[in-house]
Length: 289
Image (cartoon, rainbow, N blue to C red; front, side, top):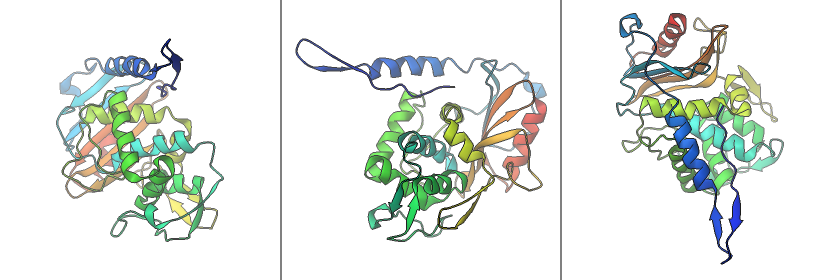
């Protein structure tokens, strides 16, 4: 799996710092850009999909299995958190048991969205907040994490966009850490696949996004909203992570990693029009492979 390059510096005679990270990021871009060769299945064999855009990638074979409207501009919905979560996991992995007191500046526009209903002076651990944002898809937890990682939400969004460029997701633009609809926030399915592939390579993020449920240090219960991973008619034990959600403008989305015993597939669906359609369609893709 792809891991972020650590920053290394050398000193010139003029005592100037020369960032090696730029070179490493360029290499990373070339690696990811080469990950998606031509599809290996005939179009005639593809299952019927209502998704606006779809992309399926075989990890072991480094092959694109299905690409449908994968370079068409769409709204990302909750798949934005596939960038938010791993950045937070990387930055805070050594602080999981640290207590965080919620401040007013950490609280975003949570009204009307799935939230932990955090309030000023609430105390949670970093682990609690990660599970809230990644497992529970809770919007207010995303805003708190953004502030913890970068000092402000705006600075965190800049970091998200920079990471997108490093991963070769040049057609993606983030304007918030949650996926709340913004006409200026757009992506394409192949970009989402690049981000998701990197996310799946983060063990902490994959563990949290695959958890069925979690209880915070204060006794609050968090449930995964991904019906592939919980007791539901759509449960599929072949799947791990990563994210699902919807907005009225962007439809339903899902990204998951599924194994069939021989190969692992990264599946991305964006713009599914009907509720629960993302589950039936991603399962049909897994069965097809």
